[in-house]
Amino acid sequence: MTSIQDIREIRLAKKAQLEKIGINPYPSRINRTHTLAQTLVEFDELEKSETEVSVVGRIMSLRGQGALAFIDLSDGTERFQALLKSDENPIYIKTDEDSEKIETELSGFDLFKEVIDEGDFISVTGKLFTTKRGQKTVAVSGWSIVAKSLRPIPDEFYGLKDEDERYRQRYIDILLNPEVRKIVERKSIFWNAFRQFLLEKNFIEVQTPILENTAGGAEARPFETHHNALDIDVFLRISCGELWQKKLMVAGLPKTFEIGRVFRNEGMSATHLQDYTQIEFYQAYSDYHEGMKMVTELYRTVAEKTFGTTKFEIDGQTVDLSNDWAEYDYVKIVEDKFNVNVIESDIDQLVEILKSNKIDFNPNEINRERAVDLLWKVCRKEIIGPGFLINVPVFLEPLAKKDPKNPKSVERFQIILGGTELGKGFSELNDSVDQESRFDHQESLRAAGDDEAQMKDSEYIEAMEYGMPPTFGFGISERLFSVLNGTSIRETTIFPMMRPKDD
Image (cartoon, rainbow, N blue to C red; front, side):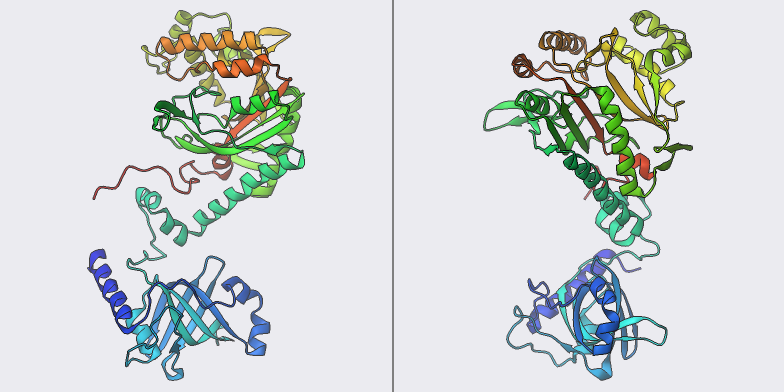
């Protein structure tokens, strides 16, 4: 079997042959009058008028039958067939970047057969016709090289089967697998549906810092790096500008949103990444009750625009976003399952429940907050949704307002779909004294070894002391897209993080 290296050497020789006779294998300018999609749309008119077209594309397949060469071209808009016939002597069309004189005794057809391979990009010129089998085709009267490939593309039928290789060579995976390409296109629709929804409601899009002195706005382990110019250690953000956007509420901007990258130095799984896209938006003079109504409309709109439906299969359960959304009481659900009131419980009681129910935990890292969260995660899997999880204990949320009717809980909701948390919103805490107290508690958790507890941001407290209006805030990551798409989050990531390939 011919090795990849052997094929590469052969193609390097063909590249050198082109250069030797005066042809640039990588010209900047190309001959093109139509995309392949335009050619198909206008085919009947162009065929009838016998108009010559010039089209460009990658050779996806090349079939030679003696004096014939059938080419399957793809330019990213469509695929189209081209046909070279030796007796019609298709010429090589010189580009501005070729030598004034191309020194070869080969005919244009023979030169094509000698130096062109599957995977190469070419331009072909000719009139359109329909074959006896009904295949729309361009009869090539001239051709030119656009870009020479040095490695062979895997067979389209077999493609890349190894998952690591698919992710590592994602460009080949997208090229050969229409379903993967559809994911890329669908994901663009997904984020633009969010953007359009908010812009139509008069939100303004903002960009906030990715490098921060304090990693705030979420509970997660951050990536740390060094800022050489300032000679300080900084963190990559773990939220999509939550504290920054709330400073903009202080600044008098009533509605803001950001779609951006977030970085968390945590584990990898089918639902978790370390580098991903998230959207967060904030609306002044609003609370989480109003937020529930808006988010219900938002999810239905995004689902319809992205997937053309509101009904999805999530972990074997049917979830329809068009149904009425329920409300689930956090404290009651955990109490019904484990016979414990998590607000009144202490750490020793919670640890015993974890042990008796064989729920894994690290005894060196466990605290009240983590223990309660582990119990909740067991309960969550049994909730189909769609709905809002409410009545979350105040010690689990450092940034949300307390419920005035139940000060031990906060005005926060999480969206539950098919047993998965897919979005979080709350009435933002705007009492600076209360906020500082909660930050101090989080700092005590960090001091005790919980490196996912939130850091204290004194500059945020300072901003809040100038006065922040009542505000509703909401955030959701691209996990929502992967769940609705029915695939792992790594599958819906264009270039997922991989270990460096061994040389």
